[in-house]
Length: 450
Image (tube, rainbow, N blue to C red; front, side, top):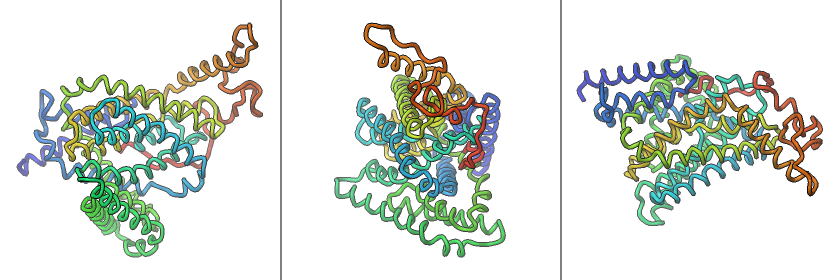
């Protein structure tokens, strides 16, 4: 691609992503699937205008978008969230991952696409999108609700799992030969992550002094250089480049310059992350989507089921009622950037060709479905309460008599079992959607539409 062609393609990609995103905002859709859709429509596999003939022409821009996306996520990562959440948060996040990653593992085995593909699928089905989760919370005005702190806490637990998971996955899917080589590569990757983790825990004061500068221009050049350099070292050591950038963000977040860096990197993240999603769409052939429609439908249904189960468990753990349980389940349903990271890794490792169209379709469906279901979570509440009332009636009714009817409140708890109300729920924790409860919780990404 010549110089002029490159400029035309880049400018067209940015404008196309912006147009699709503006159209999507009018109907309440997140930007991630729309950026992908723009790439599909303007890519080489779709009739009509072809903006970019080869997705590899955007490879470096796409890699930079992924690095900035994870770097920003590291800046927004707060270990204090885990400390404040304690064992309950770790339990809730652990159960969420266990149900969803476990379901993804079983799903991959059932498909029979291969062992390495199964490991990728378990991560795709198991990890929600922080960008979509945050955007839903902001758009629906749920930042002040009591279950929001739990939802954001679960995404923090997912981030920790993601760093470990990608470090372990890279040697397995990269074609390492034999158990010895895999173990050595994993050891090297985890040793590198440990060094960065120690720097994040004990070295922020020294690093803060090294990077401190008054001029914003010099600060931008400094943190970009560090993030991209460490990402490159990570790639050389067998760790995904984006995880190196994530750890750099985690380190710099603890320095006095952290708030300024977060503000300065925000527009860069938005711009290049859009190119990452657009470039992923360029590689998708719509003709291949039909062949994976069946597995995608099963995966979506499986994810929805596991999310409802995890939402019910988490709500019960925290003493919430049916409405917070439904909000947890539907808000965490979206899949996005992390699934696409795994798709890019799978493509680079020459895994089964069906993975890319499967992941693309799965992400598109859930990225659209999640905000729609989250806005209409009251429907899920009625279903939860109806099932609970039926089960309660069958177990509490005396022999030979019809099932005991549900209480007038329609609650999901056992009548008289709770101190706050007749159905065992705390009314303050199960308010209608319009009521806000100040909690001091702040979303990790105010706009959340990376």
